[in-house]
Image 1 (cartoon, rainbow, N blue to C red):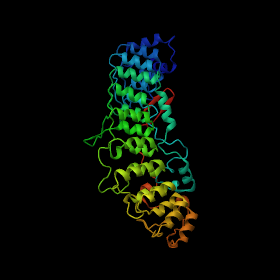
Image 2: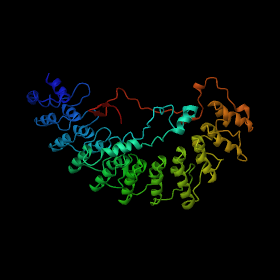
Image 3: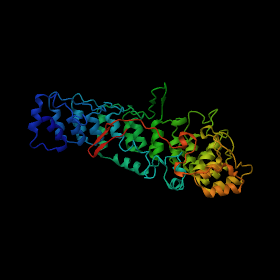
Image 4: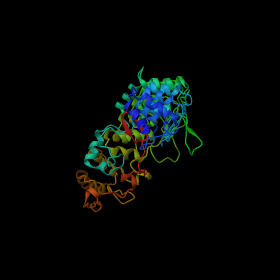
Length: 480
């Protein structure tokens, strides 16, 4: 009976008639006070921390023999739960108790500090629309090439354009906020500022990704490294500049400027801060970053794809960013080649002004892009359903209307497959071979033979009876 009472107590939070009962449980603290509930294997102290019941926490901590760091199956502690849920007073009580591990790591390597600063940031990259699901996932998707899919694609914000969530994150860290108080408590306790979780994010990286200049500055002032490196498990070297990378994607210029003023370096390659800034269409940040020194030339010998920041902007139709990067390329690295994938993605996305800008920059129309399985730009224009792009392509002297990819498909094959009748008629007018038109008996079952990306397949790790990672006073969620 006492065990059932203990695990009902944190939810009730009423101690007027109950403190005597809980003190009776002190007779055998290891069996009763430190035991866990049957459903989640969570201790009474953890439940009290989750719900922010300060008096319950005080009573439990006063019992001799209580474990201040009980772990649930995900290795989470009461301190991490209290920090996540914004219970500053509970955090203060726990930190004041001898033996509390302020840097305890859980199954995803998050510390209490990381749980505090990662609020609202972990899922910032999720699209805010009910139309983006498995079937509409970009850039490769059969549903994406449907009439409804392309209409949605042209009108939607980029997947990583999360301005509303950024503003919400910034509001969390206003002066005097609960979470700001928790961070200050943890900093005063001397927690590890360089700890990184399983997603290789440090505290300052989360703060920068959320676009909170206030939080970034606070962490820097307490010793967080502006160029903190995150080491890959299977690589001897580490990646620096993760904070600048996150800030560039957030779109908050003040945070970017602060990091640059404090000596942030811009990494090259996949971790270049230019990539998320270009992807999200933050033209002003792209321009600011281009004035910063880059460790080495972006020209990569043997490369067969277009410069990544430029490609990110092309795929999402960010005209100003594309223009800025093309000018930078022209004046700083005129030898940097453009490849056929540049025009391909502009045509596939239906971004006509971007497409015409690339033609003016002499982006090639012929060549081999291995990862595109040889699909010609003309076929990409068909998929993008922009008749202006398709008409412009057919006006180019020497364009091969019957060019085939590695599977023997032409632009006409694609037009028939996605039921783009307007494109089909235009191609036939310009000499497309009717024999390449495939009869589609059941359009709903139509799938091109072009590999996993075109088919929009995803890989899901099997999880039997998933155990919650996050316990909130607002509910229980399962996420990584």
